[in-house]
Length: 426
RNA sequence: GUGGCUGUAGCUCAGGUAGGUAGAGCACCGCGUUGUGGUCGCGGCGGUCGCGGGUUCAAAUCCCGUCAGCCACCCCA
Image (cartoon, rainbow, N blue to C red; front, top):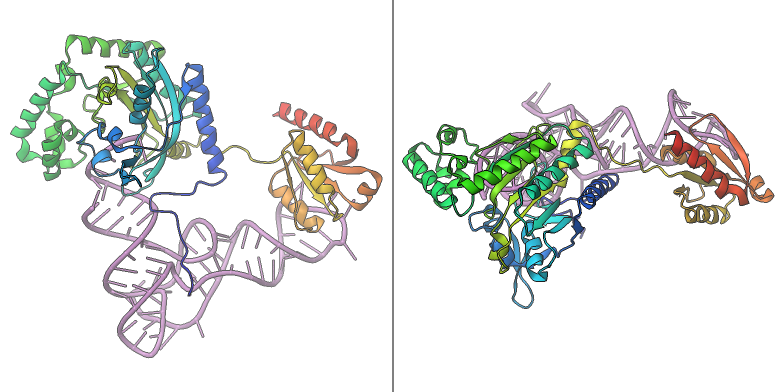
């Protein structure tokens, strides 16, 4: 009986070369930026106690419907992380760092049991930063600007920054009441779906994309009109900071993020190059109450997460940030059927030269075709005559300098020099 | 989670609406050059038509189920 083939689980994929190298390059670029701004790297576990994420919000799908949670062998309720902010705040509370603000960056996979689509996967990757221990608007500005600069660093231009303030405990209750009253009065005009949402979290109704809701939403009261002096002043300072940096933003008074912990500054990066509904390439905001709700001291915090997979889709749409060049520096051919190729490849690699070589004793024509295909700028040819005389043939695969005999002992030095020259020319 | 579209070689896709025993281009391999690539020519490898079941003498083609991808909603990165 034939065994059936396995395939990756729904919504999960194998990311292979050169896409994997490209993703790595993206993370490297992010790490560079984060380091320049004083962020340390944090690698937290992929699974956490379920309770860590329950604080994210009882009215969010991320927690209530989409979480991969299970019982561990000892009966503990465990969840695969659906997002990283809660994990990082848990780490903050656990280790209680004394130097504040505490600034960290991260990258890694997260899991949400959703129905997959392009740019929406059950296992997906994010890069992000979090800052705990300061509510200085300068921190908000630094965080938002770092996200913006990252998109710029990748070469993306079709990104817009949407900004809002969701207020805090001093003004949110009043706004919620006003919003709820408004929607209740107009609930007859709302879709059924939105009426259900209204019962759970009136704020989230603002996020509905259903056509029939739009008229009601358009006239709904806005958070910005309910901000107290303190929160309004903070928001104002954030805006002034972004303007000072020349980071363009758009006030989006109905921007609501899907996680309940957000307060005050809230933002989203949307790609205008992506035409589907999955155009949010990043988002974040303040969560001044989260540390306390995870058992820590009251500590303000802010951060963002950027979707690696979606950013790469957006880069494709913009034609920027291609996969890195994976061509080796040199291709080693051998027709002597000895160990010469193995030894020479090892020597060159030890000298830091990227080497690909032929296998399986194929004829020279075949080996040359492979050398050509992998786009190696140089080929080292080991034939009977070269081997006997202690030489090797070095062939220029790109230019017109033909090929020359090189003493085997001089190969590393000669090739290194040529590669240096080539890199300088580029 | 709801509704819809799609699923044929490694890749992109024809064939399907009139059921009759699987095709193209690219890629890969080989030869033209028994020690030399990129172009060109010739030849070749490769698919139980996502999977399972049904109708039929006969199913890639019709029907049902299932899995996966995609689109919208939802949600969000």
